[in-house]
Length: 325
Image: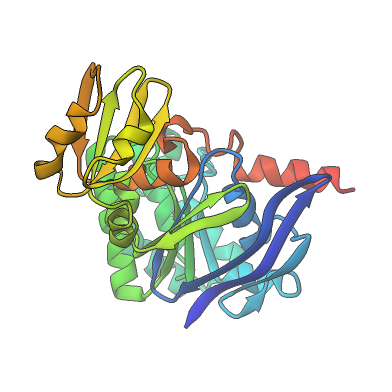
């Protein structure tokens, strides 16, 4: 059963159509990755789902509630970890959680019990009464995740949750998320520029480009669809048509002097491929990755787009709201 549904969801900013008739179904307990290059409509889509932007057309429901007609009920269903820090650094960790719990109308006994549970979950129990301004970046991110989970949301939105964290803290963060999904059945909608995270964490991935979903499937299926190994050749003047005639080649494209080839049975056909190129300066061969999938559908490497559409969620929403008045 879908917990997030969109039908012909659309958002326009004047003459610019940021999201084009988006149809999406995300199941309960699913970890869903929404990936896209800067300006593709990813952030706009998420802002509509969390009720910070009003759709221009179409419909969206979250946890059974309509984002336009029942925004308060939608927000009660959500936990959100923004890319930008939103903690009050002049409060303690425990006080930040207590403030959040009051905003969601949680009874005192429940909020105190949940706060204790989550502070222990994210390894902050011994620092709960320290001011947040004394926390490291990793500690603050863990507290934000605890805050997002405090009221047991049906859906948790994670916007670049591990950006800027060291590898060990990133791994621990995902351990927390996987535990919550496993134990509480929480649905997670994730954006990330770390493709290995999306590959490891997501049940399904949707790639959005120019406001449309251009690919949607399990990471393994998306990689398999590329067909064989990925071979990158730095080969000035390579003849693409000649390469496409080599046995095992399912695709050959050039980006400047770099040629990218999808090659089945690479161990057998690689010598013939290299023989078809008069001048090869370098060769790289690897199994398909999610970043290769992203590159195939968008023409860009996701790692080149590291600023989340160049703007934060809240700044984007405020500018849009002010512009519509």
